Structures are given as C-alpha cells and as structure tokens.
Length: 352
Image (cartoon, rainbow, N blue to C red):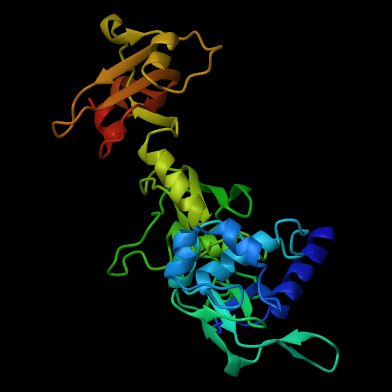
C-alpha cells in the first residue's frame, strides 16, 4: 500500500510539472532575476574582469550562461528545491553546454498567477535559451528535461502500443540510475537494425520490467539501455543504465575491464586438468581475475590467442555426472573467469 501511495504521489507530481519546449519536456525548476539585478559584488567575485568587460556584462544585463552562474551562487545557501533539483552551474562551460542542449528556457518577464494563486508560464513569453541570449531583471530562467518521452510501462508518460511484455525479465536490483536484470537464455540483448527478433529482445522488454527514475533525476535516458551484451544462448546478470551519466560511467568501467565476470557452463566430457596449466588462486588473482581470498582451489589457465589477439581464460571444474551420449558419457559443470573478452572466447577455449 505504501509503494502504491508513493507511485501515486510521483504520478501527481509529474502531471503537475509545467510543460517545456517542445511539449515532450517538463520544467523541473526555475528562478527569477531580481528586479534590481544581481549583486554587482557577486558578479565581480564570480567572473574575471576581462570576461565581464569583453561580454559587456552588468548587474542588470547578463548573458544566459552568466545568469545561470549567478542564480547558482545566489542559491548556494538556500534549501534544496522540493523536487530535489537545484541550479548547479559553477562554470561558463557547463552553462553553455546546457544552453546548446536545449534544456534552458527563458521566460520574459514575471510568471502569470492563476485564480488559485499558482504560478504558470506564458507560452508566448517563453523560448529555448541560447548561449548568446541576454537576460534582464524580472526574467525567469527555467531548467527542463525530457519526461513524457521516457519509455517505462505504467509510468505517466507511457506511450507504448503493447499491453504486455514479450517475456518475463527478473530484476535483481534497481535504483534511479541503473539496474541489474537476469537475462534468460534464448533471447538477444539487442535486435538487428533491420528489425530482426522484433520485440523479443531484452532492450524491448526493459520498459515493462523497470521502474522509472524519480521525478527530477538528472539526465534520464529516454529508454533504459543495456551497458553490455550477453550471447543469445547465455543467461545471467545484465547491467542496464537509466541515465546518461550512469551509461557513461558504467561503459567506462567495462572498457577498462574493472568489471569482473564469472560464468558457469556445462561441457561434454570429463575434462583433463594438466599440471602444467594449473595455477593457484593467488596466481589467478595476480592475473587480475576476481577470486575470493578464502578460496584455495587450483585453477586451470588457457592462454591461447584468438585472431592474433591475447585471450586468457581461468577455469575449474565444479561437478561431474553421467550423461548418455556425452563424450565419455560424462557432463562437467565448470566455472570460468575470462581475463580478456574476445569473440565467443569461452566457447572456443572450452571446445576440444
């Protein structure tokens, strides 16, 4: 009941947010330039004199990026906005970047007041701010983000044409920034550009499985997206990003091989463990493979180049059982820890 109440509250907040430009955007926060301008001392303390002179800035005549910096400085001692979003522009470069992204609005003159005393934006006074725009006393600066285009089922912005998920996708963990799902075997993570696999992909199913980020979460992606991939025949944990910063940071960690991977596979046959390719847990750790310190088992190493590139896999057998038609009538479950990530590396290394 508590979760339903929270979801209802979040839905009401989202529907109450003013619409931005275009209407698929919603306004998260706004601030008004004081009637007598910003404090002259604040302007001089925030920007070098040469920039103030070159841009012809005064306390009542500012460029839009400078106005964003002034608002940030004036709000430093204020409580956080009720929607959890504040102006955070401490440099010209960040302010210019958001102006170019189209997430800053200028409302010329004060906001309107309706019969119930609520503020509202005049459409004919509002425009998307540009880096070179000037801002004057009484003007309102607003921050907007895409909200109605975010793809999550059962969210207020849902515009899907399908009522049910293509398949069940268990969620192991999620917050407002990323999620971890348990991909089933037999489905692909991404579809082909020509439409192969249709909706039967992990990416198409994510909107049905995940909760949308809370209102005000910074830089939400229009559609949650997997950070990496698993082969169609492979099941297991898949990391998904919900925001652009999360996608960038998680992708960097995968690229720099800071993410440690462990796989379990079943192979045909009773696998030999030659002493010449045997290593200890400590030796495996020294290679950069994620192994618990408490483990003292011996491991096998396969160091066999693929396509003239280094390919290294650490593995050990976990269990064996009889299986008719398997090699030696035996099946073996193995644990694999790849140090590198070549194409189909694990399958190719375990094939003999």
